[in-house]
Image (cartoon, rainbow over all chains, first blue to last red; front, top):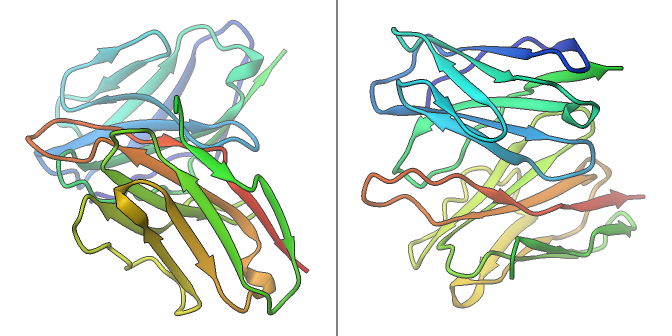
Length: 111
Length: 117
């Protein structure tokens, strides 16, 4: 699975959009981009995933560049409860194998 | 159940003792994973079960660690002769597995916080 690179930490003002970048320059054509987050003392929570088209759900939007070498997770109106570590992962969808989590981006939403 | 259930939620044990951690996956999920997370670290893969296939044990850090999954459902992670470096949160996740080109994410439990003193 492709390695991902994320900033270690970010701050965002409450009510503003949080844009979390992820580089995955070695991604293969059949690898999906997944985002998870982990709120302190809880298990990781699925947010969104995509292959090449931009995706949106009730939690977030995922913007994937045309060359698929990077992506951005967007939380449109960050709240204090969005403070968490956000993990960007790429993997082949149907291998059933493990996700490899890096250290993620620690997002702090500031009042 | 509605989610992945892990027990106990907290476990304090003395160095050298054995511990067993339990995971109840979501009903119908064929894939089950164990991860651990040490303080301030990312998630570290330990072991993966998929249906009746032989488990992928490539992430187990030593032969003191073992896991089994009975009846394709409940899983137990056993750590023998615990050491202080085993202190971590042990997370279990399940998914529908990966077949037919479909995309399945994980659902994680809340974890077991293991402290070896």
